[in-house]
Length: 171
Image 1 (cartoon, rainbow, N blue to C red):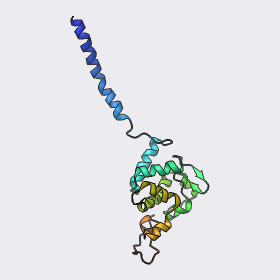
Image 2: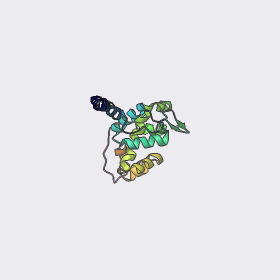
Image 3: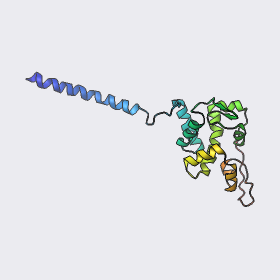
Image 4: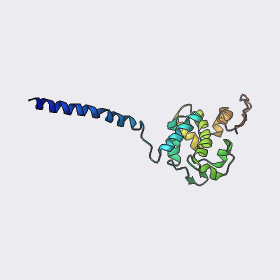
């Protein structure tokens, strides 16, 4: 009789000992799955550069996925790298290297991220509009809204009716 009662109790005790291991496995799982083509290293870069440029991570992921599917060495005509930026546009954002340098993920995230920041500012917080402005360009919209300086496209406004706030160019 004692054996009949002791055996199930012993099994319950052993089962209780295995529960914490299951909890640890659940806690170790990533909170958000990686996007197709994304690597854990790329996730860390996206987090770092989204914070650096003060833009949502989701926006940066959308543009990278749309433009290169997380391939830093992607080329399409005149467009280069992870975020498929034109070298001329990167130069507007302060880039001083050769186009091949834009195939480095961090270099691309630095200068294309600055450009995306301007698109984000013009979008008034709408991710879809920010992606649209990034893809089609936003110089004239920024000019018309007196945001050339704020978006980093110029160091001073060109419209006469804009308040003149000059900025020092970032090196």
